[in-house]
Amino acid sequence: MVDALVKDELLKQMEQLPPAMQRRVLDYARAMADSRPRGTPGKDLLKFAGIMTPVEADEFLRGIEEDCERVNPNDW
Image 1 (tube, rainbow, N blue to C red):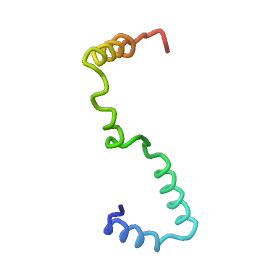
Image 2 (cartoon, helix red, strand yellow; image 1 turned 45 degrees about the vertical axis):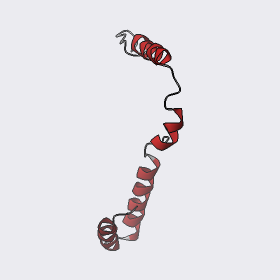
Image 3 (cartoon, rainbow, N blue to C red; image 1 turned 30 degrees about the vertical axis):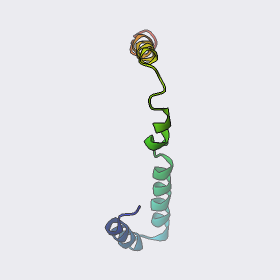
Image 4 (cartoon, rainbow, N blue to C red; image 1 turned 60 degrees about the vertical axis):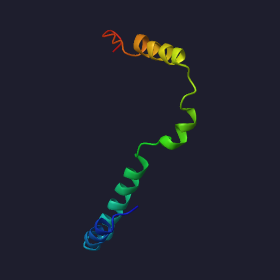
């Protein structure tokens, strides 16, 4: 969804630029669009809600705490 005020202001500013700079703005906008985080919307993940038992969830969390939250200063 495009904010109409932002779009209008952007177009006004673009009209004042020479074609080469307009191209740079377009390239920049495309680069920004390509760098957006991608992922799965939360609503698509709801089907997984509640599939773990409390015991499985505790094991999962324990594994994360034991293996993912340690810092080894010699690794870098």
